[in-house]
Every structure is written in structure tokens, then in C-alpha cells.
Image (cartoon, rainbow, N blue to C red; front, side):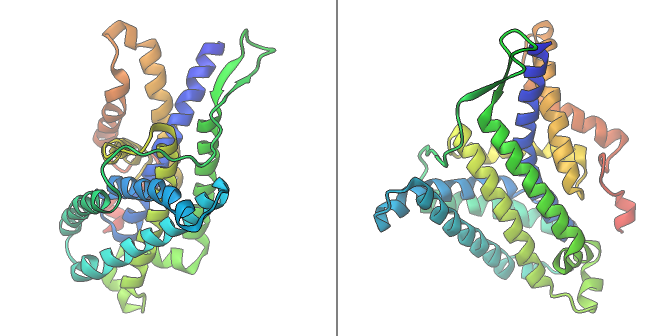
Length: 309
């Protein structure tokens, strides 16, 4: 029983990492009605910026405190992601107002390649590390109940807490603020939103900025755990099945979908892997997403497409 719980906890923690990236996909879709293929590249660029600025700023300012250096680096990276959002709106999205969803989708693919290139140009192509002081030591739970206890990664647990706080903040933002309501109106109908005075250009800057901040947090967590390298943008796309499962329009669905896939991957690999030669963890999420596309394409918590037309 102890090993089973350990596997479940490990899956939950992995699921939270997927969910952090999936939040960015959901945010863009809720505001523009298009799937953002650039989210993986945004995670990569944000992680690269954090890794490099946390190294450069203490040198430039002569700071010895790691905490202060990381805080300043985070602020600079947040401004950097805002600048990216402004540039994307000014030079891409502004010219695609009221265009078909397919056009916007192709635009996000182009943005993805641009971000990959600008990341390498500005920050280099080596493998970097991020050290924000996340605890690395394992935590043993239920030692009095199970022999040896249940091993839980404190790093993963910290990431789970961060993700939970982000979800709560984003849910409040979308439901109870005027900007959040404007975002939902823009997603439903661009022309109708403009007709009642909602500034589409400002709304897109806001949502891409928020998605960039989410990407920054996800990049910090992933970079702290695995290091920052250019395969991170591809790894981030593993959140695609999470979005399909939870629903393209649901912020809580991104979290629930991440948890389901994280636990499902770990349990399948541990208990079914030995019978099929292993490797289930690589394709489990995509098979589960395919099943949902066939029988419930809107996901667990998403809206039906017909309702958005």
C-alpha cells in the first residue's frame, strides 16, 4: 500500500507540472478562441530569461543575496514577457482581427518559431540551471503506518502549491473582474465585443501577458527540476493531452486533467509496464486524449463547440 501511495503522489506532482503549462493554452483559447501552439516556446523563452538574468543581475549590481537576485530576475523576466505580448499584438494579432481561427492558429505556429529563435539569439543555446531555492530533500510521510513511509518530493510538492495558488488567482480573475469578463466576451465574438467598446488590442496584450507570466512560473519550476534546454519547448507540448482532457475553456479543467494524466501515467507504467515491455508513460496521455476526442471532444469541463458559435 505504501508503494502504491508513493506512485500516486509522484503522479500527482508530475501532473501539476503538466497543468502549469496547460494553463497557458487555456488562457489564450479563452481570450481568442484559438489554440496557441506557441505556449511551449513561451515556457522555453521565459525559463531561459530567468536562468540568464538570475545569473547576470547579481554580477551587474554586485548583489550577494540569492533571494534578492532571484526576485529582481523574476521582475525583469515578467517585464520581458509583457514586452513579448506587446510585440505579438502590435505586429501579428492587430492585423488578424476577425480572421478565421485557422489563420490565428497558423500565426501562433509562426510566433513559436520566432520565440525559439529569439531565445537562442538573446540567451544562448547551452543548458542552463535555475536555482530559486526550491527544496530538494525528500519528505517521508506515514512512517508510523507503512514500513519506510511514503516518499514525497518536496520540490514537486512546492510546485503543486504554486500551481494551486495560480489556479485560484486565475479563476478569480476570469470570474470576478471586469477584465476577465471582457476576455470571455472577446473569446465568444470579436465583432460583438468591439461593438460594445471592448478594446481588442488591449485585451490581447493582457491575456498574452498573463499567459507569459504563467509560462514564466512553469519555466522556473521545470528549469529548477530538469534544467533549461531547448528541448523544453517540445517537452512542454506534453501538456496538450491535459488541455484536451480538461477542456480548452476551463482553468480548473487544466489542473484536473493534469492530475488525471500524471497519476494515470505513473500507475500504468508501474503496474502495466512490466507486461508490455514498458514505455507506457510516453504514450498514455495521448491515447487518453484521443479517446476523449472521439467520445467527448469538449473535455471534462469545456464548453461544446456549438455553444461558442
